[in-house]
Image 1 (tube, helix red, strand yellow):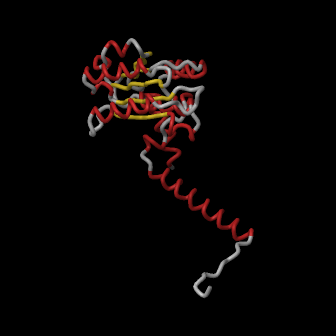
Image 2 (tube, one colour; image 1 turned 45 degrees about the vertical axis):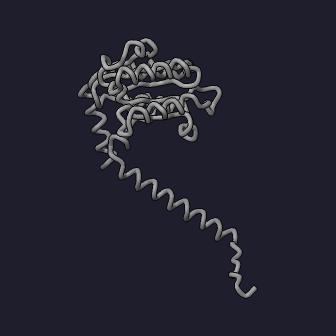
Image 3 (cartoon, one colour; image 1 turned 120 degrees about the horizontal axis):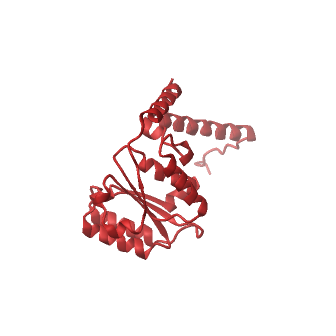
Length: 211
């Protein structure tokens, strides 16, 4: 056929070099992305033993993970005290990276799309079967105290109905913003403001790493 294109046979060396070049490009891209991350993400603790503060909370959560009997959780305290970092560290310890996409859902209750959208996504995630039969799925709901009492009661019913399939971690600034019916279904942890010394040590370490 006069219109066919010439076919090039790759040698093993050429194929190996192509794969290596692609790997280098991917690695370089990941490195650039890492450099551009804000420090709060770049140096977020990946596991509970990396926490400079909240030693008691970290110890309790580690024991719960080891017991394979994680309850529903309620984290409360001022902004910037490590609540979200703590539950993300828990998820890193519970699931392999390839599992987290299907086993963990992180949502914000004050989502601009509205509480009905949030509720529908929660229900869809909670009711779908876990990929790993041996583990519960994990749903992280930030700013849970922004939900109305009606929305919280609907959430409470979802928690009750799907408790064999999913564990919830609710995060809020004010415990008083969460209805008692949800309190009673969760293990509560209060996150106090960070002490100066551990925070200073952490920042000093980051400054050294950043050069």
